[in-house]
Amino acid sequence: MNLRNTIPVCLAAFLGFLFGALFVRQTPVKAQSGLKVYVKRDYPPVPDVVPLDIPGAQVVGFSCLKDNFVECYTAYTK
Image (cartoon, rainbow, N blue to C red; front, side, top):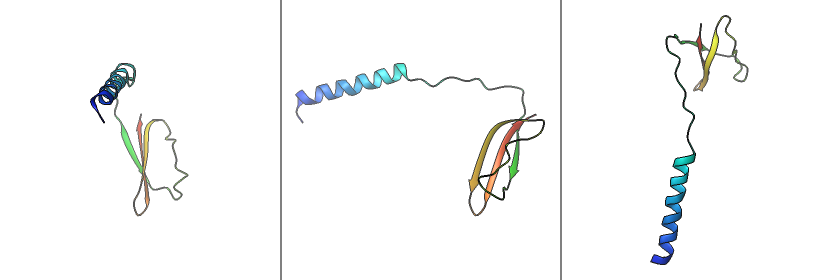
């Protein structure tokens, strides 16, 4: 690759990076303060059927982990 080919490639890479930095941004969010978040651990008998309803609470997060058995965590606020 000679210098004549290198300059346009570097310029295109720089412009792509510049436009990406200017126009692609994540939406900022603010954390809710003053709320306590609780975590409930479950061992569902069937991995695809897990409860997502906790009476009197709002579910704010959910995750499952499979090692030797399936272990699911539900984050919620009251």
